[in-house]
Length: 148
Image (cartoon, rainbow, N blue to C red; front, side):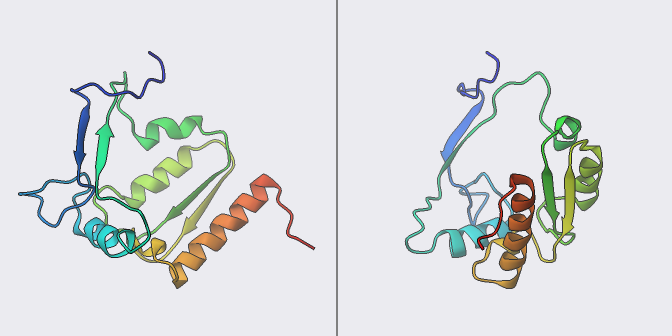
């Protein structure tokens, strides 16, 4: 069925932990220690309602997903905010730049300092920088006028 994202036993994993301190005894969806630190320290703060549990479904597709495959079809305004020092395994600055170049629609590239999870810490300078840039981008493309 076109667009079906339901899983089967063969395409579904979980529920499993989102992160784990011990990948040998308790494997998780996200393996890097940086993910563990962020989710446990920040995501797991009191009142967040975050649970360290996820079910992953990878529906069968005719072509495996990769951003470079979909980029040439993006017609909508796209903001790519990329940290050159991103420490996550699959975050590759050169691949992100190549993907950006393939986008035919309106696009904006924004280099930001810090690592993968540094932008998510609120309050903080990087969080403020990221959210301000995202707000500018959205206001531009959604035609939102500031209050008078």
